[in-house]
Structure formats: C-alpha cells, structure tokens
Picture 1 (cartoon, rainbow, N blue to C red):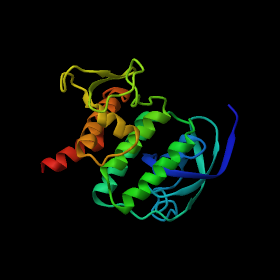
Picture 2: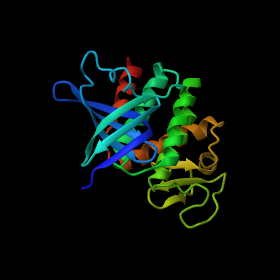
Picture 3: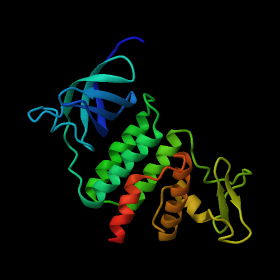
Length: 237
C-alpha cells in the first residue's frame, strides 16, 4: 500500500476516540476524500494546540500523511465563520454526524454532500428548522445511491397529489385504495412536497419525518441511533 500525503483539505470532525495515553483517533468528513480516520498524536496533552482545534461542527483545513486505514494528522487550521451551536441545534448537528458515521463508507468522496452538510450547519446556526433535517436526510440517501422515488409511483405513473401511497423500500410509492391501510402510508401531496423540499404544510413535514425515519432505520440495519434515544429521554424528562 503506497504512502499518501494530502494537504489543504477542507474537513469537519465527526467523532473522536481516545488512543493510548495522549492521542486521539479523529474521524473526519473531508471534501475530496470522504470519511477518513486520522491519528492526532499528543492531542490529549493539556498544552496541545490541537485540543482547541479538533472541535465538531467547525470548518477546518487538514493535512495528513501515511498509509493504511488510519493515517497521521500533520496540520490543522481553523477556518472560522461558523457560529458555535447550542441547545437543540447542537443536538441535531450530532444527529447529522451520527448518520454520516453509520452510513458513509470510508474514503468515498461526496463533494456535493460535503457542501450540503456545511450549509446545513450554517442554517442550524441561523435558527433550527425541522425542514433542514429532512432536506439533509434526503440528500444523504440520494448521494449514497438510495435516492427516493417521489414524483412517480413504482409503476412509473405520475403521483396523484390527492392519492395515498405505501412507500416500498427499493421500489417506491405504491398507490393505496384508502389512507392508512399500510404502516408506511404517505399522501401524494407529501411525496410531491418532499420532491420540491417544500415543507410549508405541517402534514407533509410530519409524514416526511416518518418516512425518513423508516428509510434510515432500514439502511442503518435497524441500529438505534444514540442521538435519537437521548433526545427522546430528554423530552420525557
């Protein structure tokens, strides 16, 4: 395996793990190399310059070198411009990171998804809207090759805006004789609204959330997402 060297790469930290006494393994989402694992030597030392830089949701520019699955972080520069997130926005940003950790293969570049992720964080800083989450989930599935069929049904017939459908994973919407006769029942209007990323109708937003939740559970192999579990517990409190 050849040794590679990468410089000046835009990136965001997704997750960090302690490694040995003083170091960290840092999972990063990079623009041109996708998800990469890097060894940040000495990053846990009290006086390490890296301690205050390797923060989630902040735009970074990284350089690394090495070979194998975990390479060595050589340089980290903070790029600024992203306000710190707090409260529900911070929690939802952790949800995005958890989705990327579960679904994004290592070293598989997704330049468009990288820019959608950065834009979603900026939107979160301006004021969290649930529609931003739905748009990100849709972009993520599309980028990974799991794009939703939304404007035509499984037979290729245009969606009837006043109809009701069961969304069959891997096939698409199948028209129902009556609403609610399937566990994954969704209105034709919701499918069209989701296609156009128009969530002004509260019903479309609610049904889109239920649809996305089912699809993500399928593609993550039914793994319970930690952020979702914690959020549910906080709501119960």
